[in-house]
Image (cartoon, rainbow, N blue to C red):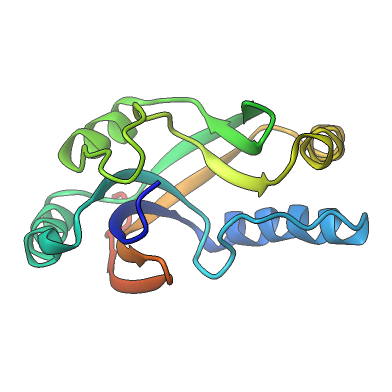
Length: 168
């Protein structure tokens, strides 16, 4: 992964933020502390880009947010990337897919886009324990995408938070 890049992501609603924070507290109560980024709101990353695209991305986010509204996604199951990243997998719907197509980019790591909400990153054994604990306490639920954010990584800095109007 590159040291410095921009990411555009779809931020989840406050009720979902609380639910996901509860998973973090559960992990902490079980002495499971990961290396995942924890100083930004829970989100689904849409794309990553080089730093020099900051102004272009800010303008695109502002423009697109006037054409979009908030929308629901179903968070349906716990999954993992190579037993090193534990995440909640959303059910892909047309709205999420269309939003990602607008902000398609994989500058940071060159991986294909896989929609997910990271809950835990760490070594294999810790991930295995975290996954089991989360699975035992997880039920699918509906979340709402309420804003589009632009952030710089690393260190983490939120550059723009553009709310999406409520669905009518």
